[in-house]
Image (cartoon, rainbow, N blue to C red; front, side):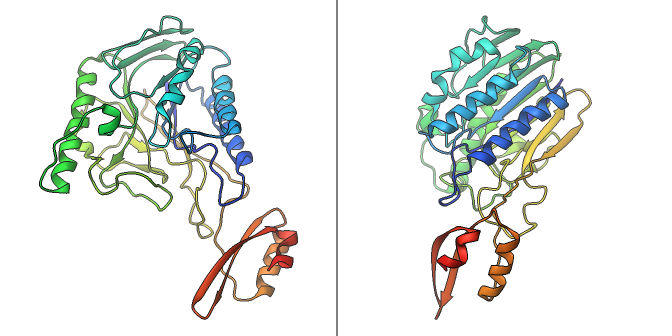
Length: 339
């Protein structure tokens, strides 16, 4: 069986004042297209489906349209886990309806059992392990939504140092995964789907509102070797997790902040992984209007560039006597009038 691993869609997120619904729809269409092209029997969305706990209507509609298209034949399984930006309650609200189509939504990291008898193919969830069997094959999954003390409804004891607290939390997380992996069948691939900060991962400046200080960092070496694949979300740069050949952050499909031209090459997209051959395929997402940071030293240079980029939206920063100010201009054909 092949799985498509995506995360950090951040549906509903604008770029400054620019609405990016069009770009997000293109991302969803690409996921659907590639899932079909690779004949993926499983799609995992590893958290941060939305950018805020109260996403706009258009973002919610894109999410449900994506799930509807992915499960149009009632045979592909889709597993969704909540991220730190998602509202667990909002994701859980439609879970019982979605499982009729083979969509399995997990928002509570302490949940261990649920009835999936109404799924369109064989699916069970017991002891924290989701077992699925469809025409593409069989596999088992450990769905682990974003974990912190609040979502686990526990309070860990305070220790003398941040390093000690980090190690404590890492061991707690690893124990939750091991408990579930011990209950998983041994004759099928086992996939961990999680949204967490792992040690040694390379972050970028677009991630926010997370415990980067160390308290919630996970040492991947603590996780069981039994895992066939680790589908991680949380960091926006696509990368392999240190010390594991079969563990990846898929990264955000779109650049979420400004970068220099060329800096985002091969950094954004999603991953297709074959659970039988262990082949990994990186699928890039082409953003027709990527947020790029350009530097010009005269208005003439800026005007020339804007004439070549007639669909761009420009944000102009001017510097004077060591002080800078930023203001948003209109689309480029009007930009020079606003400068």
